Image 1 (spheres, helix red, strand yellow):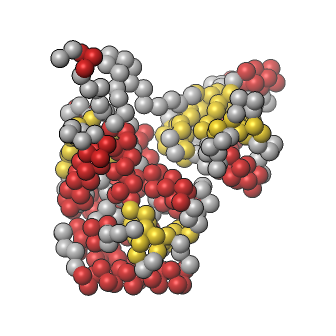
Image 2: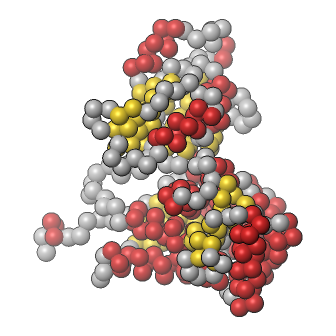
Image 3: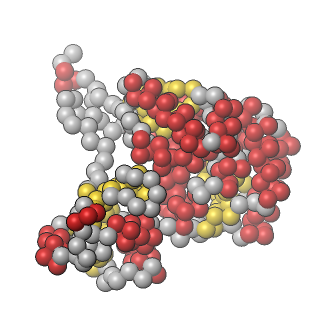
Length: 378
C-alpha cells in the first residue's frame, strides 16, 4: 500500500473516567457508535484513565484544590499515554475546570461549554438543572448560560437534597429504579408548572441512563453526555498533518496600562473568565482570560516602580495598528449585551467582503471586532 493510500492520522482522546463507572461505559459505547456513523469499519483512538469516584466526591466536598491535583495527575498520565486532548466523563469535576485548564498538559473539552452552545442554538431561555448537589449549587452552568441570556433554575433545597441522595446512593452504583425515574419525572413536571422552565439540563452523566429520550414531562432535554460525545467525536475526526505543527489554540498577548481596569473590562463587560494569573490575589502582572474557546493574555506594560501616572498617548495611538477578531455568530446579541454593560460601541455593520462586524476598543485602545459571515449570522 502506498503512503498516500493510508488513512489520515487522527487524534487520540484521553478520557478521565470512573466518575462514575456506569457513565464511563456509556461514554465509551456512545463514542464508538457515533464514530461508526461517520467512519464505519474503523475505530477511534481512546485512552481511559479510571479514577476513584468515592475519592473524587469526598474531595469535591472537602478540598477543591486537592480535587484539581487529583484530576491533574490523571491528565498527565493521559498525556504520557499519547492523548492529544482530554475530556472528563462527568459534570461535577468541572467545578475545577478553569484551574485544570490553566495547568493541564492537554487541551480540554468542556461539557458545560458544549451544552451551553446547544442551549443557545435551540433558543432556550429558562433551563432547569439536575445533577449532584455540587453541580446544582456550584457556579458551573449559571454564569456560562447567563452570558447567552439564559436563566438557570434549580430545584428547592429539599429537592436538591433528594436528587443528590438518589444520585450518590443509586445512580453512581449502577442502580436505575423505576420508582426513582417516576419521581424525577414528577420533579421536572413541577419545575415546568411552577418555574416555567422551557428545557432541562441533565447535568449528571448517569441521568440519561435513568431518563432516556428527548423530553421529560414534555420538557425538552439537554443530554449533556450526548452533546459532549458529539463534540469529542468531531474533535477526534479532525485529521492531523504528519510531521506538521499541531496547533490547538491561539492566545494573543496585549500590553495594558491598568491591569485591574483591563481585567474588569474583559471579565465584567465582555464575559471572559480569569483562568490563570502570575500572582495570587487581586494584584498581578499577567493573566490568562478565556471565553468559550477564545483566549487572551494581558501583561502590564510597565514595571511597577516605573509606571507613569497616566497612559502615554503615543503608545495608545500605536495600539490602533493591532486588532483582535473574535468569531461571534449572533453579532446583534453581542451589541445588545455590550450596550447593556455600558460599553461604548457602534451598531454592527456588514463589510464589503460579507462579514457582519461589531467594532469597539478596549481601555488601552486595542481594536476588538466580533464578526460572523453575514449570510450565516443569527
